[in-house]
Length: 257
Image (cartoon, rainbow, N blue to C red):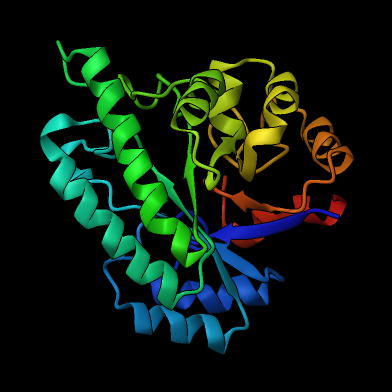
């Protein structure tokens, strides 16, 4: 059996953020994920989760200034202090929301940046974050982002992400496998999923092209879900996609799972 969570940063955007918890519950979801919850007080979000009998299963570490092009800061040598402060803030929210995993976006490499320095910074920041999160029982995730939507993102493939995970060697650091990004960068999503299954603790889905709901593009989601079921994957699958029309109309694919 597969378990799906609504990404309320991308679904139900027809309504205000705090109202999306109710809509997710009404649509049949029992869990939600979101990208950046920090605009709202943790107590406010926790109350919404309780009210609608939802679990928060994923949130991102603070990722810098999104409006200025930041897509994470974990690989940036001049922002280590900011990254460490962000880890503590994420712990505060994850604890209040009883969220068992947080995702770390690596960041965008600036023009002329030394790759080795970025690599070393990223590895040390991940070790720091994993150490801080472990006593709280929180897992740390990393993911690849495709180079079409996010040029110069530090991690572009699942293989690179796994290499980093193995180097850091923290038992609470895992792979967040995003089907949409993998379709662009790995091409054969099913093979990439099979090859990396032992590292995966969270999955996100969207079709390609368009990043819409399953069934609107070229991804063979029947095969993707079969791989997960055969591997006895018991984690969550985050619906992190842009509805092609409205969220409600786009959820019909779930009835065929």
